[in-house]
Every structure is written in structure tokens, then in C-alpha cells.
Length: 256
Length: 361
Ligand SMILES: Nc1ncnc2c1ncn2[C@@H]1O[C@H](COP(=O)(O)OP(=O)(O)O)[C@@H](O)[C@H]1O
Ligand SMILES: [Mg+2]
Image (spheres, rainbow over the protein chains, first blue to last red):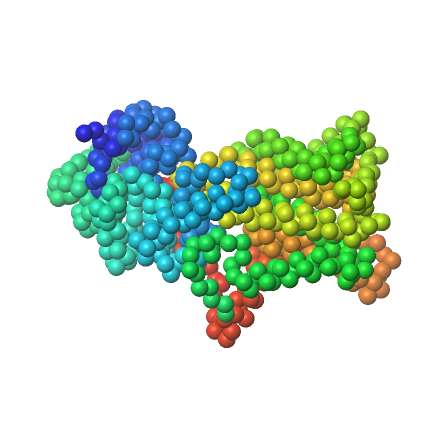
């Protein structure tokens, strides 16, 4: 069985900084794969490579047999890859419901003229989108916030809305960039159950960046430790945590 | 406080949230249609003017309020719509064809201009569109053979199925025509807002990165916004031509562009109501000022730039104290009354919950 996501010898430099250095790893269908590493290790950059926001200097990225490097950033969602952002990127001046409905954009079947006339077909499609979004709202317990503006929501809720928006796209691969950062202990616990259910109930593969080692070892099948854009160690959470190189890097960098 | 009991998703998709708002808007339409029997001709003309500005405001609102692209050149599209409409009518096309065609032509021109403009952001886009506004003046002069240059053109009389419509001789008919166009444009706008494209526009406005990650094609969405925005503005321009009776290269000046942008900011960016509130301010400010001037005894003294100055001052006050515009203020007052006496003072304070420093990292 070939991997769902395959990153091979990817390198990306920003000026003199090598953000991702000859990095290779694969994510199998159905697993939760975590990337850990100190700040500036290049974790978010890996996500941005997959999202096609950046072009790698060299290397290959394939998703389900498709060459991702042939796709533009706005075509990635169509392949079934959805993501969240480390510094929440929601649509601030819209409601939670509208944010989640934007997640359905890749399923848009209607044209501009039809939408201006709001034809019966548009109405039917809207109901279909709404049903899909309501499932996500139920799953993430977002009912109390459905018609609230993002601009007025607390941080913890925004984090969940962002996961919801990504789920609303109906992805096969979900990229979560630090889903638990800034969350309270209870909120982190919820996030843990959700990630578990996303994988088990929805059958969605998860690739996540996370600092909280409790969460990482709780949900992930495999962990990749990254330092200075290069692979330091890879394996089960226990293996990576006890890897001498990882311990060294963490203590050396002084970050947790 | 009204509570919506929803039995199906249909309720949220509907044009009106509940029977109450349906009745309010139905009553508004009835009053609007009956207005010529209620008001004298002078005020009917003023209301017509408000509606035309509101249509133009809707046009710019879609681009700026909904998609987040500031344009200081929208008078150019008023001009395109106005000239196109009159030229089509002079070529013998009936109004019912010339008018929508003028809108479509303006929309196409807008989309073509959008192609380079799409790459620009914020202030750069604003500057580029100022250039557009200035260029229009020159272009109209240069294209003298079709535009009549500085001597300008006169708006012909409209005939719809044998009924003649003219601003001065039949102000009631002209008002109804403008009202019909206003209602249609508002409906189209409203429909877009509750459909995928309208949401994609808001997505582009609020975060281009995450819109992209959701599969929204940024350039295409902006181009669509430019196109529809310019088409609506073009229709407003055509109506302005009829309202003014005569127009030339100076009619649609940069001042009009700036006024339009100020209007939607004062009215309330991003809302349909905002376009209408702003239009009321723009249309009645000159009158209010001259009345105020009369009452302090300076009626005969001409103060150059007074209107623009006061307008600018109002704009600054709004940006400082009520960035959501008149519509935002109105919503707050309404909610305050609905919750009375339970409204809290900090209810509308925005929660500052995180810093947007490292956007992608
Ligand atoms: N857009 C950018 N321009 C310049 N440097 C960048 C950019 N994005 C990331 N970097 C640099 O690349 C390195 C990796 O960053 P990042 O992937 O954000 O790390 P993290 O592992 O904390 O998510 C850092 O040194 C960062 O400063
Ligand atoms: Mg990061």
C-alpha cells in the first residue's frame, strides 16, 4: 500500500535560513501523524509546502498518487486536504456558520448568475451545504455559537471553529497546526477526543504539529521530531521521546 | 426580543428572517410605491436622488464592504454606464435593452480593469483607482467623436412600451423606474450574500490565505466582485445621467469617487442598509448645510469646500467613534431596546484574544 502523503527530499530556504532541509516522510491513510520540534524548526513551513503556499527548492510531494507540486494553492482543498493555522486565520467579520459554509466552497456547483437569481437549484444546494455543516457543528458542540461573529469569540472557541471549517470541506487529510496551543487543560482534553473521533469515526487521516507531548503521545501513531528543518527522529511517541538526539535538541534549544 | 423558532434550514436561507421583517419590508415597499401621491415633486426628486446614490453605494459596497477592495475610482464606472446607456439609446436601442446592456458593458470593463488591479492591495489599489478616476476625464475628452467631449451629452427621454419617462415632466414615473432598479439590485445583492460566491468574497476580505486553503480562487473571486460591482455602478451611472439631464467629462469627477467611498463608510461597511443610510447622508447634506448656513445668517456667503470639509469631518468622526457606520449604531440601539433593561455596557467590546503577527508561521 502506498502512502497517502509522501514528502521526499523537500528543501526550502528563506534567504540564508534553511527552513526545511532535505526532509522525507510519509503519512499512511488512517493514521495520526505528529510533527514535534522546537520553535523555528520548520514545522509550519512543512504545512505551507503541503498547502502550496511555498514552492520547495527541490524535492517531491505527492498526495494519493497526485503530484501536489502540479497544483495551485487553491486546488489543494479539492484533492481533499484541509488545514488549520497556528495563528488562527478565520473570517473575522462573519458568523461561525458562514465560516463553516466557506469550508463547503469546494463543493460549489452553482454559477454566479444562478446565485444572483437564487434559483431553486441554489436553494437545494444551500440546504445540502447546511446539512453537512450542521453535522460538523453537532460533532464539535458549536451550537451555542452558530450565529455569533468570530470577532467576539474567545480564543478557545476560535480554535475549534477553525477545526470545524477544515472538517466542513470534507477532507481526507487534515492538517492541524498546534491545535492545542493556548488552550486550557479541559479544552485540550476535548481536542484530544475530537482528534481521536476524527480519525476513528470519520476515517480522516490527521497530520498535526503540536508541542503538548501529552496530547501527542495520547493520539498519535507516529511522531516525527524536527530540528533546523531536518529529521531528527521518527517512530512511536515513546520511541521519539526517549531518543537521545531529541532529548539533546530539546535541552540544547532550551524549549519544551 | 424576538426569538426565532426554526423548524428547518430553509428558515435561514429565506430572504426574510421571520414574518415580522417580511411585513416591515413589505410595508416599506408599499410606502415607497405610494410616495408620489404623498410627497411633492421637489422631495420626490430628492428621494429619487437618494435611491440612485444607494444603487451606486450597493455597487461599491460589494467590492469594498464585501470583498475588501477599496476603490477610489468608481465614478469612472458611473461614467461608463452613463455614456454607454445614452450612446446605445442614440443608436436606436430601446431603453429596456440599452439600460441593462450598459450595466453589462460596465461590468465587463470593470472585470478587464480588475485583471491588473487584482494583484494590488489596500493603499496601492486605492491609488491605482484614483488614477483611473482622473484618466476617465481625459478619456471622455479624447473620445470626443462619441462622447461629445467637454460640451457633453443630453439624456434622451425614456420610452417603455410607449410610456414616456422623464425626470422633470414625469418625476413620478422616473421615481418608480429608479425604485424598481433599486429593488432589483438589492435583491441580487442579497441573493449573493446568502450564496457561495458572497461568502467567498467575505472570505477573501478577511483572510486571503485561509480562503485559498478552502479552495477559493482569489483572483477569480475578486474579478467577479469587480464585475458585479461595476455593473451595478454602471446602472446607477445611467440613472444619474437621466437625473442630471446633461453631463460631460467633469460630471463624474474624482470628488464623486471619494464621496461614494465616504458614503459607504459612513453608512456602514459590509451591509446593505449601510449603502442606503450613507446615500441619505450624501443626498441631504448639502441641503442641511445650506439651511444651517441660512439660520446663522451667512446664507449669501459662499464658502468654498464647505461641503467636502464637513463631509470629511463626519467621516473622521465615524472612523474614530463608530467604525461600523450608521448601520452599526442602529443595530446597537435596536439590540439595546430588545434586551432592555439587561444590556451590558461592554456588550459590544471586541475581545482581543490573539496577536496577528506571524501570519503564516
Ligand atoms: N515567510 C517566511 N519568510 C522568511 N522566513 C521564514 C518564513 N516562514 C518561516 N521562516 C523561517 O523558517 C524557519 C522555520 O519556521 P516555521 O516553519 O514557522 O517554524 P515552526 O517549526 O516554529 O513552525 C524559521 O527560522 C522562520 O523564521
Ligand atoms: Mg509553527
